[in-house]
Amino acid sequence: MSSDCLFCGIVAGQVPASLVAEGERVLAFTDINPQAPTHVLVVSREHHPDVAALAAADPPALAELVGLGQRIARDAGHSDFRLVFNTGADAGQSVFHVHGHVLAGRSFGWPPG
Ligand code: 5GP
Ligand code: ZN
Image 1 (cartoon, protein in one colour):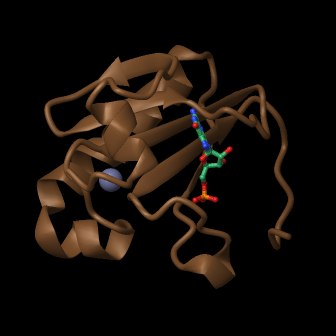
Image 2: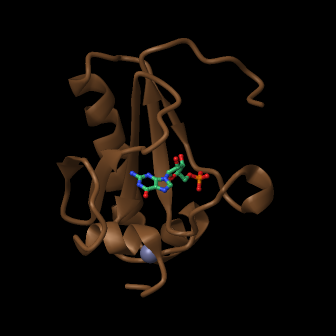
């Protein structure tokens, strides 16, 4: 755990969050500023700064994260979903603890803004 990390605080139960689902290595909670009818963040329980670091350090955790993201979308009634990993500040990452955004329930444009 990184003591100054917001999502480590949520994993530890020290920061309140609306939990959606749990796995052995990952945890899911609703985004505080939803951008779609379903907008859930899936994070690793261990601190890794971004998805590339997680892929290098713990591939099973990344696979679990992706699988849980699909299940969350499906359980919310959506066969289609967008799974986004903003990686680096210029790509829009603002919390440097890996998280997949599970977005579903509306149409999405491409290319992204
Ligand atoms: P990023 O910009 O790093 O890809 O995504 C960070 C996400 O975390 C944003 O969508 C933002 O709304 C969300 N967020 C920031 N602070 C909190 C918080 O305290 N609780 C929850 N549930 N989400 C947060
Ligand atoms: Zn962290």
